[in-house]
Image (tube, rainbow, N blue to C red; front, side, top):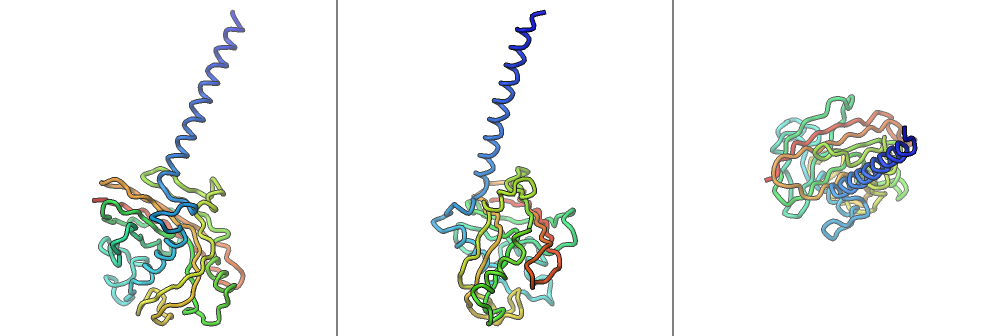
Length: 252
C-alpha cells in the first residue's frame, strides 16, 4: 500500500474542506452584516443613535387608550392595522417592540404590511427616560434609567431564518448593536404609553439594542427577535423583562 500517496490525498482533502468551510463562514458573516445596519453605520445620513431617538418619539407619539383594545398602544395590544400608525413619509418604518411575556418559548406573531423601499427599525430591549417622568433626574440619573436592563440583557434576531445577532453565541454583538446613553428631547402626546407623564417635550436619554434592517425585497419576509433581561441596576424594579416577537412582513 502506498502510505505516502494516501497521506497526501488525505491532506489535500483536509485543505480543500478547510478552504471551503472558511470561505462559507466568511460569506455567511458578510451576508449577515448586509442584512442589518450596525451602530457604526449612518443610514440615510443620520447616526444610528439619531434613528433610535426617532424610534422613541414615534413610540411616544401613539396614544394609548387602555380602556379600548382597538385604540390601545400596539406594543401591548398589537393588530395588523396598528403597524401603520404614526408612520411618516421618511425612509424608515418603525415597528412596535415586544410586550412583556412570561417566557420566550412562544413568540408573539404579528403581521405587518410595509411599503416597498422602507427600512425597518425596532428596539429589541432598551429604555427612554426623561425629566417628564421625574423632574429630579440628574444627568447621571437619566443615564442610569436608560441603562437599567442593558448590561445583562441577552438578545437575538433573525431575518428570513438567517441569524443576524445572538449575544448568547457571540457576546461581541452587544457592541455592534448597542446605542450608548444618548442625550436628546423626548415628546409625549396626551394619553401616551406612559400615562403618568404630562404631554410635552422634555430633556431625556435613550439607550438600547436595536434591529435596523435595510429595505427588503417585495414579497413576504419573516423578522424575529427575542430578549431576556433579569438582573437590573440597583434601585430599579426587579421584575423580569422577557419578550419574543415574530413579524410576518409583507413588502409591497
